[in-house]
Length: 102
Image 1 (cartoon, rainbow, N blue to C red):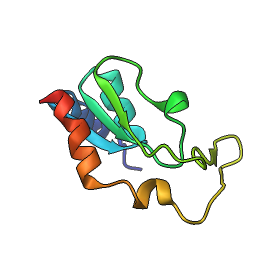
Image 2: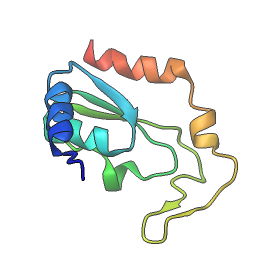
Image 3: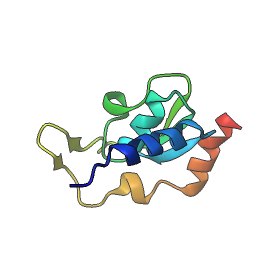
Image 4: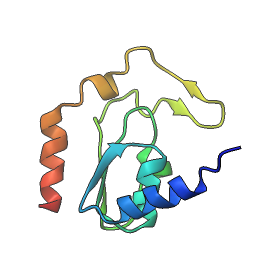
């Protein structure tokens, strides 16, 4: 059996040295929150109020659509098929949000 713990420690060390971590709502972003670095989290189906970072260094980007958030974490149910919350989020909007950290 191979232990992932040394690899996880290495990953945490790398993330903690970043000036900015950009990603979707996932475990890596939570490592960014925990190491108190600048983070920009891209939210689609999930609710930024439930799983987002809450410090000044944590910013979120998402589209304000009527249908979002549509992911129910209690049942893993996704309430749409279009994924407009992700497919219509422009690179320009993400870059614009990054300007906060520059």
